[in-house]
Amino acid sequence: MPAQVTPSRYVDCRMRVRLVPGILIMVLLSILIVPSRAPAADRTWTGNGADNKWDTAGNWLNSNKPVNDDRVIFDNNSQARLDNINDIVGLTGMEIKVVNPTGDVTINDIGGTGTLVLATTDPAIDLSTAEKNLTIETVLILQGATAYSVKAGRTLTLGDDVNGQFKVTKRGGGRGGLWRHPPKRRL
Image (cartoon, rainbow, N blue to C red; front, side, top):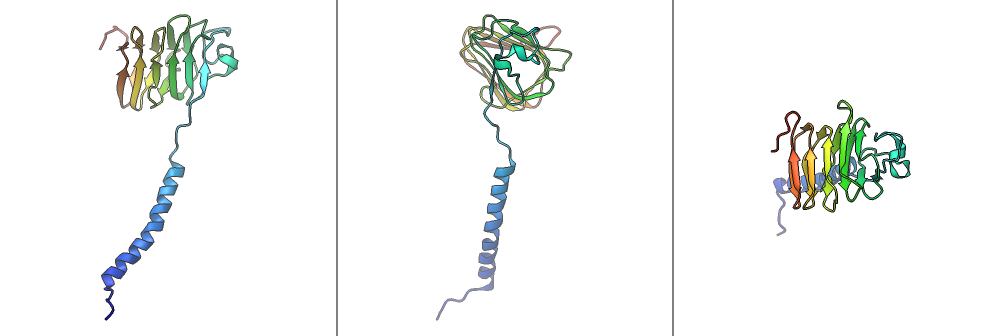
């Protein structure tokens, strides 16, 4: 005598068959809709422009100013105006890397217009091979887990407001400081 299929088993199988295509469609749509971070373009500071502002094309290698999701690099091309001003409003997803410029680097802003939203890459600030120090005197917005790497003997100083909901991880043997003006106070 053949086995009988009860209505509850039939309904269960039928529901599974109907759910599988729906779940697959939802997974595919979520992959297409969720934005992924494209690799950052490298934008190298030269300081060869008429002033020390980030919005001046002549201050960047090949006149390529940074835009969202770029990596700003200070390296052996970075010869002048290392005390510079981020005057580009609303940069997001940024990474900063210091290698071997001719001197210590300071990134300033003008009245809070140069706010930087750092990427959630690891590291968002990279001084792992740096031969010089970095001071950031502009408002930073960190999102999620942010890591920075500082080589032994080097110092990263974040001297303005740091905002957002974040977790900061420092790697490497160098020093990292976070303080707000006034007064400068080491945490």
